[in-house]
Structures are given as structure tokens and as C-alpha cells.
Image (cartoon, rainbow, N blue to C red; front, side):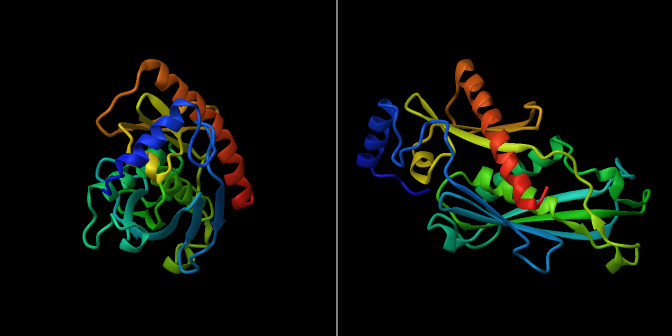
Length: 260
């Protein structure tokens, strides 16, 4: 990880003490979000998301395979993330590293725990054949907050995915059966200050990170704590409240982007 110069760290901390951030945002305010769907024509569903200068593409591919032994009537989902070197000098070529694995797990957990996909409707032959949903996430430009950008890209891609039944001689194609999307919102803490949608510099000095995924009712569907620092109970309550409020706004934008 790039070591942020101490002079820049001191500047960020001093600004935060006065209630300010480098880009002028409030502590609980997101950068501009842009969502574009249908960007990869050969995928069953795809989307590109920009949060500030962070840019992520997610693609969905589907195949028919065997179900898990403990869920013979349910479809399967697998999530992978690739941090390509051109996105950041901190990313290296080769097998997925710890940060890529964690990113994929956080996105996967938010989707899985919220029961976004109706896996029971992806069963072809119980115990024999089910649909497998592959979510591939590619980071194009990294300027902080990959968790939310990757999650949002995956959601937009899934919401526009068509199951390629005709290709497998299983009838007509149909829209992937999904429910209400969970929205992930990430906060970091540094020097006693908690901010949402951290920039790259803010992430570099962060002591603790908390990602909260909420549904349209404001209920928590998944949480992920990162880094070695800690949050107080009051800070966690504020993070949950801000995540719920921002989640509603982001969900509205997501629906508009996918035409719902």
C-alpha cells in the first residue's frame, strides 16, 4: 500500500478537526455517482459504476451445472474481483491477492445475505442441474471506496441480467429473478473522525473501516468491519443511520439507471 506523506496526513487531520474534507464534502456525503448498464455486449448483464474517480465494471455470465449437495434445489453464485495494475500502482498482476479476495467476499456477502437472487427459481433439475451465476468485477480506476463501487456495479449488472435459457435449449430467455437490492455504504475512521465514501487519501490514513448493507426498509442485511482500529457504539449508530439515508438515495439512482 502506498505510504501517504506525513505532511498530507497532517493536512487531512487538521481539516477534519474543523469539520472539512479536501474535496469540500460533508462527513456523510458521497461523491458523484454514475451508473451505466449494458457496457459488455457478450455478458448476460453488465454495468460500469463511477464514484468520483473510482471506476468499476461488473459482468454477469451464466452456465448450467450441478447444485451444492446441501442445497440441491437452489442455483449457485460465485463472485470474483480483479484489481488490474493499470487501475493503481498498488495493484499487481498475478493470482488474486488478499485485497481482491476481501472485495469479492464483501460484495458476495451483501448479495447473498440479502437474498437478492431467488436461487430456488434457478433450479433446472433438482439435484442434477441448476443455473450458476458468475459475477466478475474489474477495477478500472482506483480513487477510494472500492467496496461500494463494486457492490453497486454488481447490483446494476444483476438487475439487467437475462438468463440465457434458449442457448442451453431450456426454453425462452427470461430476466434473472431478483428481489429488492441491498445498498452497501462504507465509512472509515481516522484520528477520531468518521467519514463516508472515503477518498484514496482518506483510506490511506484510516484506522478502521465499516461497510453496512441495508435494504429498502432500512434493515441491515450485511456488515463488514475492516482494518485494525475500532468504532465506538455511538459511531456505529451514526454510521448505520448515514448508511440508511445514503442507501435510499443510491437505490433510487440505481432503479433509474436500470429502467425500474
